[in-house]
Image (cartoon, rainbow, N blue to C red):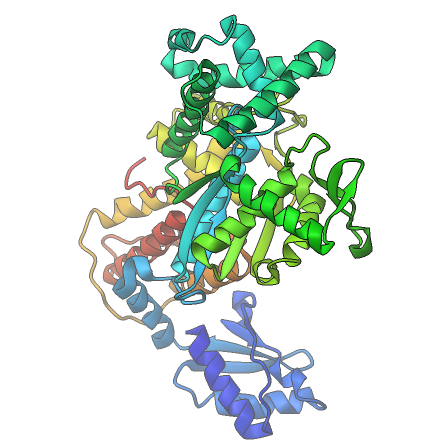
Length: 557
């Protein structure tokens, strides 16, 4: 509808003024019409006169009921009832496809998010990127993209050496057979607890620090020799798998799409090291006190170490190898990475290094960052210190609050509460999570939208829905107008990669329906057929939007 109108206005402007001005249609307050454009003000002097000429042509269009001048030359446009009625028919015809577009039709997009590290725990930040990344992937898929979901994590590095040291201490030596005593349901938690113990030892005990550094080198050596048989190797591979099992279990419980590929750092390190060594020969990198560094000051950045003086690759080298590996695997049109904003400057240096070898990858990459996730009134926490806000902490707080509110469909409600609470906030800043607010069905929350869907379904289940045409009254017109906005909202959310736009729209849509329903009877009214048709379209659009957010749309609550 919007595209058709914009095309017709563009043709009018070209006929009248010979101009190919860009036509931008916005949504004014409903009392001013259905669309507004400032095109008359782009055409030079006398915008009011320009607007009058355009309006004269607009009034001849079948879609336009009224067009008026506002201010210095804005044009407000009101659509005919027949045009709005066609929206309802389109919704009911397209069903779950309503709202989709072809922005990325045929394009391959790699979406990397979640990125938990084995031998640590999946904390609240990982939970946020997991849920946000899943929805961004949904948006890209609804725009026609072939989306590849990938995950990246550190199965080598000092944190692994730290955890392995503590595990060996806990087992009383390199005794892999003793791992059988760890209860199945506590294994990932047990591994993460060893990380905390090891970190405290590393920071407070020089002897332990030296031992941990040696173990760190032994972990790298495991991958170089492909050792799976030694007692040390058995402990490592078993505990690494426990971490992966724990991560996968959480993903299943969150009902997010499965990842297509998991890249352990051990698999990207070799290519990263080879690239750094090649860059050293070409002058991209340089030696500094036995280490290999990239000096980014000339580009307004800072110096980062890529190979330590001990000859070990850093995170920078592994990320460089990751970018090159993703390119080899997918030859993507776009690569998206979602991380915390604490590594913005770090990633700029990695991208600077990458640009020296594969500038095309940099041009096709987009780094989306977010702030710290905190409970309402909470404190920034660190998994290194053992007081992290964990993914499980957030989910448990939502479950507890949900039980207190006696919500039905406990798991679906809890997931809706957490997902929506995260997603409704614009990506970029810190995220404040309030468990009580998130589960309420009386405010801007996931359960509120689920209840809005169930409430409408309770009406539809009473009678079959006809499809009829009537002249719209004021309240019906308002609801149809809001229903018609979904394709525009999804398009904006795709272009900006901002899921909160969908959340805002769905909340406004549910409020519009509530206003409509409180002001009108449906069953037993002369306009029953029309209103049942309208509610059916509303339910379809609400369900489509909730699906994009990964939230179930229950028929009953």
